[in-house]
Length: 470
Image (cartoon, rainbow, N blue to C red; front, side, top):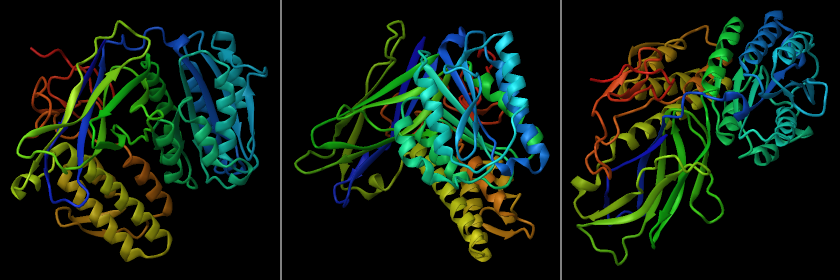
């Protein structure tokens, strides 16, 4: 197995900047994991299903949730610890009926399917209780990858029973959580709050009948994860500090360094590439200029696996300059992901304005989103925006809000826009700290249409294998 690391940055900073910060994009990859070899023993799975009273209407909603849970259960390899949690204002284990999680087998999968189909809906919603029970179930397992697949159709209306903020702190680092919205009452930003803290992703379905197939695809991807964790270490030089490191592709994930170590732990890897934005403070006081200086050293490690071929540590540089023609530029990858963040902010602002009845402001913010999406060249995002507005001129952001737009349409947009695109090919920016990698161009994946390096062996977004390059 091979781990890869590339650092892309624009190294030139002005000595006159009031709060000089250096931004860099780290491209971290893992290759050669075997694509989901012994999946069962590596994974422990909890399915948390919303069974609040709002799930009773329309009747297709609860049925779709049950069928999705069944589809996920059927995908579990023999030996996988698993449990199904019924969520309302409280949380209860639907299956198994023992204090510990079951082990997947033909018998336990069949019993779990029956238990899921017999669940009834009623009560309110307290997502903190669902996650807390999931944490306690997973704490008893020795599988290196713990995962919760959470489904909800409503807002967290009973948070006072078990505050979500406290539960997320207790769950952070213990398992990965992917969250799905169904129906028309869930809150996209609430799902993102959960998944960004728990290293997962938020998604949604417009049609209930689509959920089982989505669950199958998610489980297929999950079962390729065979590396429990990968550590990114950032060692700043004297006079420099780490402001933050966050995952920006394929979704945004919060990362917190272990106390005083500069070690950031990332979870559950298969053959894939992820990108991270590193922000460092830089103090020019007493430092030479017109030459490259090292701000920090970045390294990756896979704990507990001595067979992994690790890349050499790479520097993050700064070059102090008085030339505004140099200091005024930004690395292409940094700009791409900062534009993506602004895109999400515009959509969230549009949702808030629409909720307040400020339709002109909602239209303005969606126009801003269209302008950003056009500038980034993300046609899929423009197509999603076209569900809410008639795009008259994407380049200038001139749009017209459609008359039948509903509040839930904005929530679908919020979760969809939390999934970022690959961006420019790594190593293409002038001033990059690493060499240009194999292949300098970005190509489209034939399955998900996401961008990928031309010489990549698999799609960094969906994992689809590419044909071998000549």
